[in-house]
Image 1 (cartoon, rainbow, N blue to C red):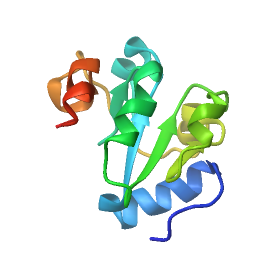
Image 2 (image 1 turned 45 degrees about the horizontal axis):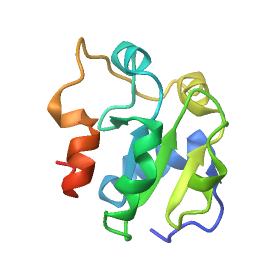
Image 3 (image 1 turned 180 degrees about the horizontal axis):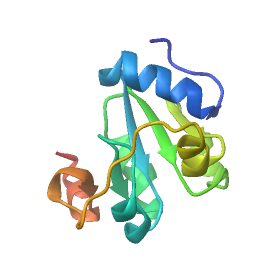
Image 4 (image 1 turned 90 degrees about the vertical axis):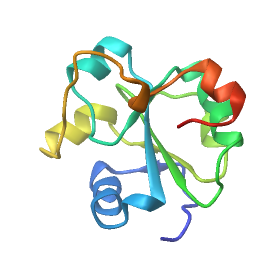
Length: 124
């Protein structure tokens, strides 16, 4: 996968990469924990918006990090980071395309990136 130059991607473009080259991207869901528990993209990870920049800067720069929000609104600071894209239309666009979602009753260790884990530089 080529690293993107544009800071926004359509839900279709993200789905195509996610389904064909899953090891090349990581979806970071910055919606509320409640929204994440109700439904999220399988394999996505929940992270607080305030923790995203520090988390990404400590990670592998060969992976595309895609930000899943409720809408297009995400900080300009995020769009300036290389290898970061925002899903145009957010989670609503993903579900409107009827792409896969899942739900969990809690935020398990596997799919929740906490500030503590971010500070250690080891998200998993």
